[in-house]
Length: 136
Image 1: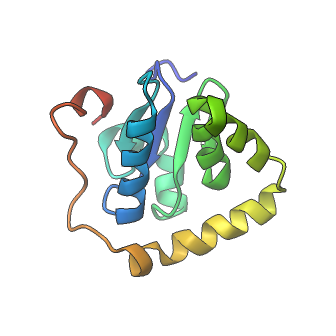
Image 2: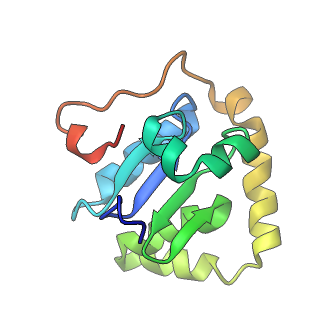
């Protein structure tokens, strides 16, 4: 794991409505509070996952955990695996699908996410109860 991160950390597009809804879903289902979160527009992302923010123009989700950095469908399935239980089973099952096929579907949604789900004018702000889960 990257020394600065002591929890699996999910980097997401902070102005994307779909991405924010996904983070809300993970927070609700992460009863053990395993995850930390940071927008790709934030300072932490610039230090740890800058190669994805620049290379992909904020069009991907990045999961950083003790196994490394995961992007696109592998990141989404990795989140499920970390949640464990039935979601962990779904994450492991999804990994059976070849990555090129999974990433094709991911890229299709990512390319159209603003049109289909909308976009905020500024990054998501955590609620007071969530503040400890978010990195700058």
